[in-house]
Length: 397
Ligand code: V47
Ligand code: SF4
Image (cartoon, rainbow, N blue to C red; front, top):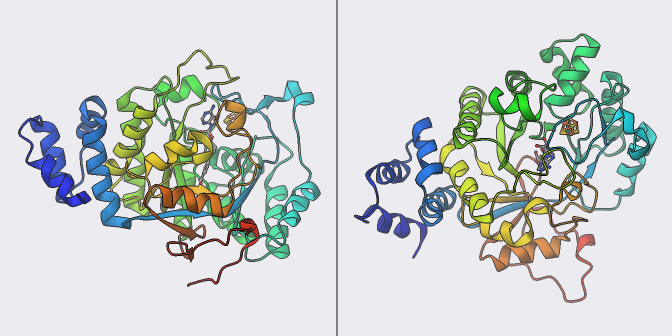
């Protein structure tokens, strides 16, 4: 049965409560669901029901296409002036001996290590420290672009930008324009956590507020640029906080159309100040992806970050609204391994990623950061003896 037939079966099921039937009818007519209906989905939507709705939307938008990209991460430092309760990664400045602080040269050396690799994106994000200021990052971005102009620079979040611009005494619009001028091409989705102050004040008190996070994305979008958005879920927040978070994103997206992808991030509880908070179940993770797909009707893509949730859950998520599983990575990110993610040294070759997607019955598409197709792997067979990470296939558009 295809996704449309599954939805029809659901719509004809007399046992379905009226409120859930009404939501299913809205989805079948491509109508937006309300805040209260979002909460209803969290409270009453069973996994099978949510999967049918989310997969229907996914199939309409993307068919079986499943996107990934080839990227690597640079984490400039794991020291941070902030003290988010969920963060296993940062060390306060007083624990400086446990941290690293890369210099400009060290970061450019990391860039150069990838000179002969077919990566399309560098993702730069880490802790917040005073020396990483506006002149530092504008010089870093322009040096990366001077060295390798086609490498897409996706860097920093409003948490860093708010701190940097305040220190430099420039407003958000001016600051983001300076970053664009220096070579910044898109903004990753981090730092969003949970927007609602009832939760944000408890877990991420001192860093940028929800409105500041949204304002910086707004200014970036006004420059014609794109960004992502995340939500850190599965800790102390209630269902209505998750819906509130997505509602604020949906409203900004109505205004700017600048977001590309929504990335739900599962809270991991190892070695942080919230270790006593239990992690969400896989069923809850899949329900959450599905509800995000249903609620965020103006977002093109829903991403599952495989390094965080394990490869099997990433495969499963493709039936619950997810159409993107991020990048090949390398083992260059420590944010999740330090928080207890399954992947302690997250690295997957292109061949492994392609097989993972094919084994889930979907079509693997390598994309660049802006979702231009780099290579469609649907009918591609890797040679037995291939060292896949060194394969360069023809660019198709
Ligand atoms: O903002 C920190 C999260 C985020 C934990 O845009 C944690 O393509 C779970 O935003 N458990 C940074 N999550 C990473 C990020 C990201 C990742 C992949 C792709 C993209 C993209 C963006 O990591 C932080 C925070 O929400 N985080 N600690 C933890 N214990
Ligand atoms: Fe610092 Fe980011 Fe960790 Fe918060 S989540 S303590 S801002 S590195």
